[in-house]
Amino acid sequence: MQSRFPGRLLPYLLLSPSVVIVIVFLIIPSIQSLYYSFFRVSPFGDRLVYVAFDNFIKLLNPDYLNSFIVTLVFTGAIVVIGLAVCLALALVANQKVAGIGLYRTALIWPYALSPAVAGTIWALVFDPSTGAFSYFISLVSGTMPNWRTNGTFAVVVITLAAMWKMVGYNVIFFLAGLQTIPRELIEASEIDGAGALTRFLKITFPLLSPMTLFLLIMNTLYGFFQVFGLIDVMTEGGPARATEVLVYKLYYDGFISLKTGYASAQSIVLFVFVAGLTLLQFRFAKRWVFYQ
Image (cartoon, rainbow, N blue to C red; front, side):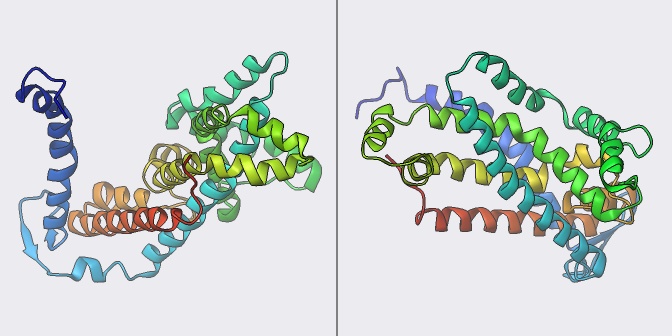
């Protein structure tokens, strides 16, 4: 195949900014984290003591295991419940009815907010004293819930906030996938007598499977890596570390407790775990992802 570029150098020049960014902001920090994970580093970073795998062995403690379990539950809810809700919303948004543009805009705008702003909104809505949702819950249950002192309720609130933050992103991709499904297939199934549920299970969902796999991976990465701002604004990992997910614990140990070596070991474990999880998703995706 003949190259479309006038010279061999131009493609490398066009790629070089991306390569430099990946090297500077991903490769080099990853190598540094791996290096520091084998040392105990002084708070000022001027003294290193080689400790071999001690930092990794220290991860086998109840606090880290608690953060690991909280992260799995939190991310699992974002992926399973969040994607299911977003798919339902996208199916509604795909209908041709009056005012559908306003509905689509209302679904998309939460993604435009920063995690800090989203966290502030949800903290105000669920404020134990003045929050609207807290008031309605108290009318139904007879008790005023306080997510700032109740760990289980705090996990539920930050999970809802994290899912709401991703609604716009997920709906956009699901909606784009729905609009690529040939209308002829739907009409042919309707003529054959297939009901709405059958059409969804036999036609719509299989044709959406590549998009679902993409969103499955992106939401998994979001749950593990991109919820720091939300949690820092709402709970700071509390109460009693109930919402201290892995990425927030890494920040706390590295930048508040100044345990650089220990935090570096956490970053390596987190990176390897998420990379392995993503590879597994690709591996098993072959069984249910259908490409046209």
